[in-house]
Image (cartoon, rainbow, N blue to C red; front, side):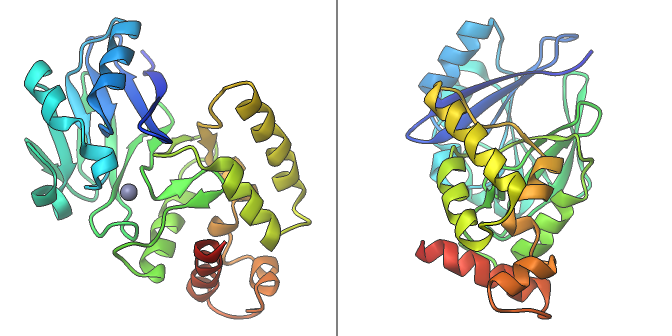
Length: 255
Ligand SMILES: [Zn+2]
């Protein structure tokens, strides 16, 4: 049976999401920004928390773990590379490992750059990816701990996922990401269409995610640093993709 998902806001602009296996009743929270909205989402859905799958150590992704674990005695799965910075970890995972939530199964993809140990959970059969703060809709996370090269490699890995993979990310940043992307690519028609769609979603009080790999490949400037048009747009025609990515990311930091 396919996975069910439930998406909701936490803190200011963080997303919380639950993944539920109807066959067994198992339910995972992807990250735990804060306990109360996750508890409310569990109550609303009538689900019981069995697991917390952590993408990276930042406090706005882990702040709710202690309270949730105390109440639900759920398993906490975290990236091996930064488990020592995450509370109450039961199991650590790394590249290629499989994590099960009931009968659902996720592959672990290491996506360092935002943090050095950041991971993405890819539920291949369900066509779902939980990318934390690596890939955003029309954006990507800040390169806080790694290097631009590392982040570009991570985004390149995510870009290889099937086009119809639905991608959930850690924050609602889509409108500001689009505003920035249009400064680099004012002529990108897919981006213009996405701008209209996202503005309508936000105006209606709806989330702009999940996005899809296909949509991001078409309109996300950070995923297209190897596109000659993007290189030319930032004055780096013919330069390596990682260098183009670094320039685009630096411009976003100043935006
Ligand atoms: Zn983060």
